[in-house]
Amino acid sequence: MSVDLREEWIDLLGRRPSLADTLAIYTDVFEAWARWTVPHPVALDWNAERCALDWERGTPLLAGAPPTLDPHEVEDVVGASMDALARVRGDTAEIRRFAQAWDRGAIALRDLLPLPGRLGSEALERATGLGAPAIGFLAATCLRPILEAYFSSVREHLADGQWDRAVCPFCGGPPGFSDVIEDGRRRLACHLCGGGWFSSPTRCAYCGADAARGLVHLEPEEREEGYAIAACRRCRGYVKELDRRVRWNGRSALVEDWGSPHFDLVARRAGYWRGLPSLIDVTARR
Ligand SMILES: [Zn+2]
Ligand SMILES: [Zn+2]
Image 1 (cartoon, rainbow, N blue to C red):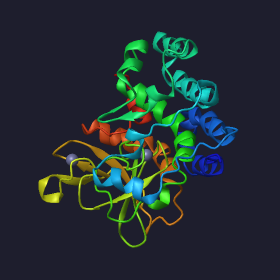
Image 2: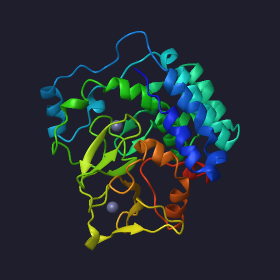
Image 3: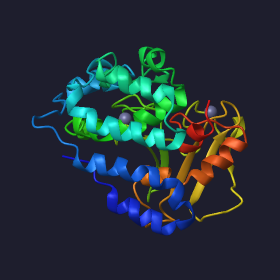
Image 4: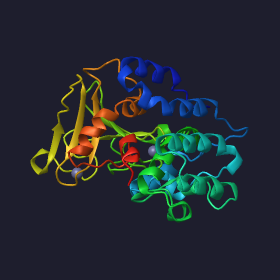
C-alpha cells in the first residue's frame, strides 16, 4: 500500500500556476511516497475494543503503540523530506547534522513521531539544532505513507462522537486542514497519518473557543470561493478550511493545504500560528 497523490498534485499546480515554482519542492516528496513500500505487513492489528480503551481515555493510539520499522525501510521517504527541506533552506549545517545523526543511528523514525504538545523528539532537536518549524516540516513530509499504512486496519474502528480532542485520534498530530463536508459537519484532517475526526465547525480546532470567545474567519484579499482561514483570537491558532459544499471538486485535504501557502502568509502576517508548520513557517526561519 502506498500513498499516491501525484495526479491530484499536478492538477492543483495547474490550477495555481503562479505558485508552481514555490511548490516544486514537493514533487519529489510525492514521488517518494508513491513508491514507498515494505516487504512485510506493518498495520497495527488492534480490534475496536482495544482502540476504544485508549480513545475513552483521550489517548491517541500511537502513544501506546508506536510503529517500529528499521531505518533502512524508511530512509527513502526520510531522505526525500530532508532534500525538500534543503531546497527551502539551503544546505545548512543543521540539515547535514540530521543526515549524519540518521546514518549513525543516533536518530530514527521514533524521533520524528508526534509527542504530546510537540512534533519530533527533544533528542532530535539537540542532535541537529533544527527548530520546531523545520522538524515539523520533516515530519509532515515523511510520515504520511508510513503512518497511513500503519493505521490502515484500525481506521474503521473510530465511531462518530468517540473522540473530541484537538489532536488526531490515531497518531496524536495536530489538525492539518479543515473540511466542511456535504452535510455541514466539519472534519479535521491529519496530514501525518491521513486520519480524520469530526469537530464542531463553530469552535476553534485547538482550544475550542466559539465565535463569542474569539473564533473569526480571516478574509484573504485574493478571495477564492469556498476557502477560508478559521482563526482564533484567544489562542491565536488557525487552520485553513475548505467548504466542500461550494467547492465540490476540491482535492485531498493535504493537497489543498500544501497548495495554498498564500493563505498561510495572510494568517502569519496577522499574527496567527498553526499546529503543523506550513512552508511559510519554514521559509521564514525561526
Ligand atoms: Zn494522525
Ligand atoms: Zn483557539
